[in-house]
Length: 162
Image 1 (cartoon, helix red, strand yellow):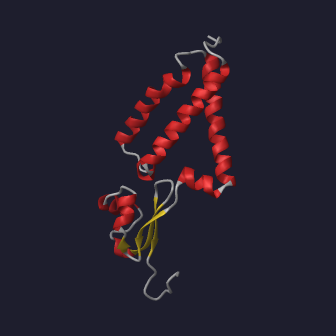
Image 2 (spheres, one colour):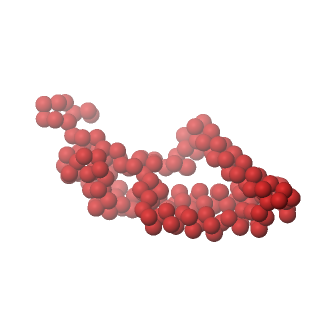
Image 3 (cartoon, one colour):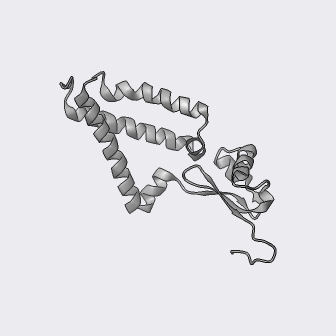
């Protein structure tokens, strides 16, 4: 129950390698998929977690191995959070950058393609924010979280925020 089948540092190395691989894989998948998770995406993440479990624990089901792995994963997450806070370059690498999807009521087709987002996805995000058409929107921004933030066009009698 408590005895490890391998040296403790092997579990740390395994956790770091698997975490780094999954971070890269999910980062390459894009922010839309992570921020706007569908049932398919949830199932995929659950299957991935099951698939990589043995690569981290090497078949060791001891409590000690589980504690080492959990502490390592939390430590990696904390270290990356601290590094991203301290460095804009690391933050950009880990989180990406916001992407303007709509500007002055006009949909940017290139930005949609970069985000791998359909017009229907954008329209759904606009509706979720209380707008029925892109023409009502000054800016729609795909945030690094995968959420779409919407800034409405100013009323006719207001000055533009530019």
